[in-house]
Image 1 (cartoon, rainbow, N blue to C red):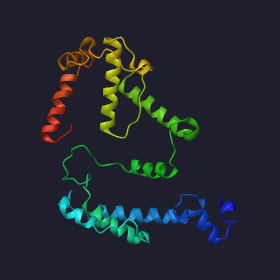
Image 2: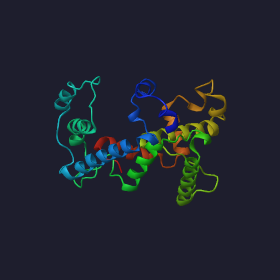
Image 3: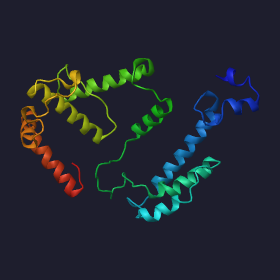
Image 4: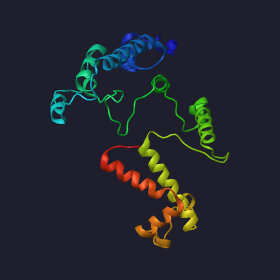
Length: 237
């Protein structure tokens, strides 16, 4: 890449490659190191300066500070940038790692995961297809196989990584829906879309549908009670 870019004059570079100094590539290693160092300093300051789970700022108070942000005039340096980020975000961010924080849905992260996030966000592999992912796909498959084995599933089991609990819940409901359709409606949604007769076997009747789900999912009552308790108390176990 160096040989391609360095063959142009400074003016040509600016025209052909605007904001080139922000591009993650081999000619900007020093810029990358500087940005990551500044980020690291900001995070360390967050850990050292946080003495309670939340600053107590109200949405109304914080929203006023955003009124003065002009996105057409961005910060000119990382120092200015992180000063702004600290004022608007870091100093008011909820500290999930704080011992006085009562867990709701979020939890403290572990350092190996933070390091992994820094790597995968920079290299930015896509696991959609093999030609974009290479080893990333095999890493995911290996972890899924190991997880299934640890749970005690047989070799026919499979899985997928999601971005969080909400997406996992949605995936579980989709799988339950497809299983219900095949077993009780004798209809494969994945192959032929939704059945035309939506009222078959109580497809649109909540009481009968719930009863069917209880047969499909033995722990349905437990999950329902736990979900209700979580909504009422704000706690998730």
